[in-house]
Image 1 (tube, rainbow, N blue to C red):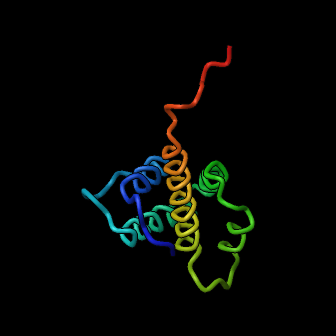
Image 2 (image 1 turned 90 degrees about the vertical axis):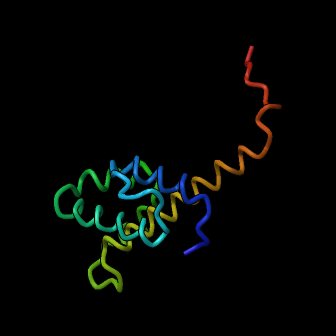
Length: 112
């Protein structure tokens, strides 16, 4: 896994998207991954359509999802999917941060 930066923002995105309640003040990357994997395990058992829809909406690669769900994988499907979600959301936070740093105050939003 890549270095965990922007912990709070990534955690907030994941908790919001998966409709989860933060169990404590701040979570480490591993704690977040474990919590997310537990939620995904429940979704695999009880809400698979919702989970797949959510993964699609989060723009997680379909090929990677299929690989994670293949029988005989080294990792449990819920853990593999949680890692994919975490990586995708970390990339999303990094992209937002990069665009914010380009000084949006100079952008011309008027399209007259």
